[in-house]
Image 1: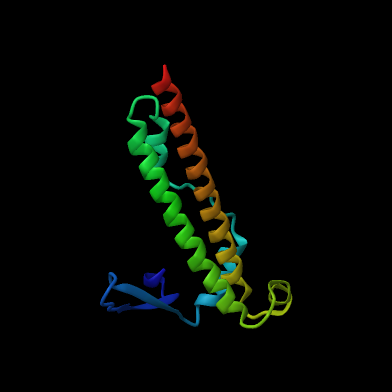
Image 2: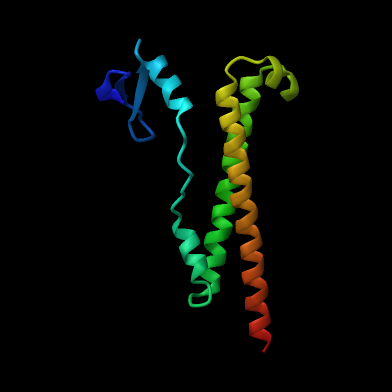
Length: 143
């Protein structure tokens, strides 16, 4: 979009993370954003190597998958905590119900709620899959 004159960008140098681009909406940006919001959205697609690995669970070592699933669940927990902190910060002293009804900038809040739901789903799936694989591994070891 930058080449269309809708946003302008500049690079932000960071010490402990990769540099990032910070964008600012130009005067033409709000009209384009309105047009974009009115257009049909594409369905989400999330490529995930771990899903491919779990798909192959019958042919690969369960221990490695269990470790990776456990690690991914811990990552999801950390992200849930981070996003929860952002939600608390956005609300200030308001309850969630009050903020959702009267708060400023509801879009970022709703986006964070989606991020939490996404990470909770990831975490729960990882934990369940790891438990199933562990149970199967234990049952096969008893044979």
